[in-house]
Image (cartoon, rainbow, N blue to C red; front, side, top):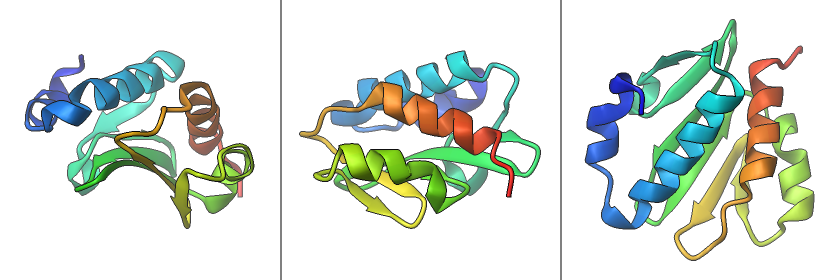
Length: 113
């Protein structure tokens, strides 16, 4: 795993550790040239003005995207997954739609307004 995220990842609760690592790993694999940082105190990926972040919340994992249009496909395909304005919230008991998250991640990092 990327050293910049090491401290963040080791502080995660056991219930989410593997799940968040899996998401971050797939994001890195799909966009290896993205700039990585801990903006907003969570793993953040950027290409130019576009970004996406992965966060550990009290009862779920949040994936934040730079624009709400990015997650339209997830809203349609997974109505039981909670979404907000540009974010996807995956509860501990929900399966992670990793392929669709990676698709949205790629769209987010190359989004043209």
